Length: 501
Ligand code: NDP
Image (cartoon, rainbow, N blue to C red):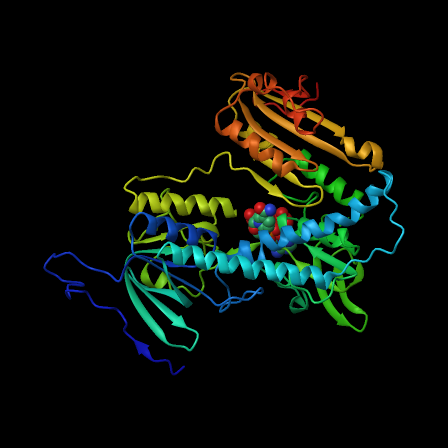
């Protein structure tokens, strides 16, 4: 490419860069951030507020990402949490309308769902948000560059602009915040499948959807499409969806997905996709064949490091390409740092925000601060949602020195008593028998994420089961069950398999 290389390093006011005489070195920026997603924007704004001179680069905006397309706001805002939640809201109205009939609503006229209208609203919203993020950066005095960034030295970043022009900047510190990218499974016909990027921007709502994988994205999209009326087949290689979550909660989610009409295909792999006149033929390792309008690969995401030139400058990556960092988010090169999904620690937006804040405090706030990855609450926005904080029962058993007490509550949400919907809410508390400390809480049911945020504060404060019990409930609510679970469902003796009381 005939790009002009401009060495736009505004060489030191006094020309002392790299001065071998030990004089102070001046840089274009105190901090240069590659990637303006949630973590990068947070780190750069907070660093600027501490008085740092900050530059940040990000790829141009588009709802569907590629190696050369991204957008200020990053995955969460443009093609992740935000548009996904908009679609979850959209999908939830269908079942709500059904339930409304039992509450006396006569829905006599034909009710249609206009996918294109929702999609347009979704796109308008993410365009609005990307604008807000840009303003946040500008108001904080952070200089934004549109282009692809790469690290060319311990204190040097190169930005390839839209017209191919390359400009390099010196920086005292470099922060990698480039997130992650959806992965495809290598089977014949894999190019016929889409990832969550495209799923959030489909021209047409599929009538027949196949989802491969059973993590967050898989169960969320299965719920979205089912809620909008599609037939959904969910294929995954384990017995239950959502590996890593509490086993009992995983079974509850599986039951709910089936209850909402999603067909589950556990312990099944897709082997081939074939384009036909009637759609995409999906073949499995159980010899099944079915036709689909859309096949979504929700089979995990990989850290976005391929084009950053990191290994060439000596930054260590792990075997899946994630940037290796210490507890302060520093790489093996003292001037290079990394936060968020690109480090593959705990791939959640609020965690990237925390890591960004801690980075700014450590490097520019004069207060070394480690991000705390314990008791991080999270939610899977399947319908109804699952939300958890702290240890699962399995983790508690594995980590505990003594006995574990498990309290559970399963009940028909009050709303269902009138609507007749057959779907139980399930809650669980995992408690250390000796200290009475609540080690973990989980809930699957309406409003679980809204409830769990408050429970997370209690766990962060080290709350005991006795303190939960002495808290007065809010009646009538589902949340009050968390403070009224009096009888032990089971006690698991240290080192023993679990037994039902
Ligand atoms: P997850 O890591 O959650 O799940 C990946 C799924 O893909 C698993 O079911 C896994 O199966 C399956 N899988 C992986 N490789 C293969 C393969 N070769 N063949 C078949 N199946 C395979 O990834 P997601 O893509 O769902 O989400 C990515 C990340 O994004 C998550 O880690 C999460 O942190 C974040 N996220 C968070 C959300 C939220 O907070 N609500 C929403 C969406 C994403 P197996 O279990 O058998 O390994």
